Amino acid sequence: QVQLVESGGGSVQAGGSLRLSCAASGNTYNVYCMGWFRQAPGKEREKVATISTLGGSTYYADPVKGRFTISQDNVKSALFLQMNNLKPEDTAMYYCAAARRSCGGGGITAGYFADWGLGTQVTVSS
Picture (cartoon, rainbow, N blue to C red):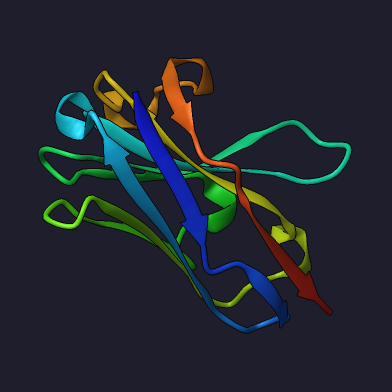
């Protein structure tokens, strides 16, 4: 099992930036894909970005392409999400997740992520 703890959320105005962090601990040796998801009130959970822990290949959902950047520090077992030019529609609870399978070029679905953090809230005001 992998324990995940997110941090870095907060309230910003539209156009602002935030950097989310996710600290991973436990059995991280067989984690092959890490991802960021988000869920806004009344909406379904949405995949935001994924990264392959071995090759570093990334995937971004269309709404965040060009604005968000996912990265990792394998030495420190940490995952990051740099969010720039934030928009009110980015307001959501953001979750870090770990999967013991390939990201599949970004095609991996939420059900394959076995471990989840408790989330960090991001609020963007207009």
